[in-house]
Length: 433
Image 1: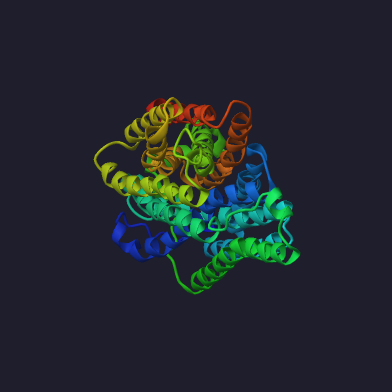
Image 2 (image 1 turned 90 degrees about the vertical axis):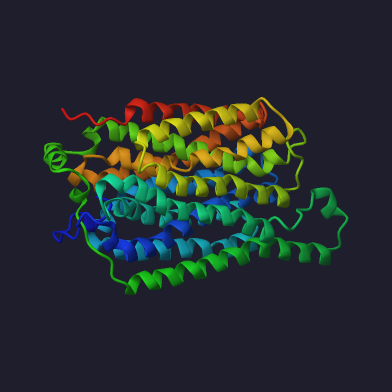
């Protein structure tokens, strides 16, 4: 189970969104924070790549360490929250993420890539706990028929975080030009010491700020009251009866296919974001300096924010699966255009993919948990575990970037989007045996 509140005996679902305005509003802070933190990895990647002189494959261990937490922590997090309640789970998740942020201070001070990876894993473990509880909770706070629209709306604030993070990171982390080995050789001992101090501070200060923000939000969640609802409130009576005949969420084909869709979606989205700074720095694309390229990453994530606000409205008129299929095909076409073009066309076509990424995660999530009733909590844990795609797929793209070049390594996200299009066209349909 993803959250103890899903098994609550207290029903507060009234079929009206207006009763949950405060709860939804306060929950948006969580979506904002984990979006901000996750996207900051896109800025951390080029910085640490230069500091530790890493290959593309090696530097993708950053995303591997971060997203592996979803595979290892999601299901245990669901069991933990079932025992202590979802609000306590949120508080613990925020504190854990704050501790992970604090660990960046010694990692930067000791100039240890291994310590950075450990800090990222702890940070992501806290974020995982937040996601396991928050996504299905938002889905059931209101009318079932507007669940996809509602989750898209809250996810838009996640995208607000991902839009601001590249600007924040570019100013504070990438503003310091990393010295080459040759440049360090001609510097005095005092100059090297001053440079190392500045290099460490470029990472330490931003993450100390994040830790403080996370601890403050944890304190706020510790004292507020939020409504309790049942997971079954999200499903029709017929679906709940059907779900009671199933022993496990794994018995639902559309959930399993949805988990794979989450796996490839997160993997594809993270792969593109992870390589953007390096990609835009290539002479055959835009030839931008890292700090300037980092700012353009905001267009990629900003497109996702705009798309989620628009998608929230569109999905009240058009079936979510139809919108999902269209967006996946559009994203695949844009990546292909970027792969086989150069200059401004290659740059803006890859940045435009963010607009079509927008509604994918929340839409897949809602389609995958449709009709699961009492198994919704377990399904949430399964879907959050599938976020591990963000660990494995960028690593594979890093391998191909090292072997066939960064330009054509983007064929990996194309394959991801093609599967998502299939899920939106056919794979989402629930089959009750």
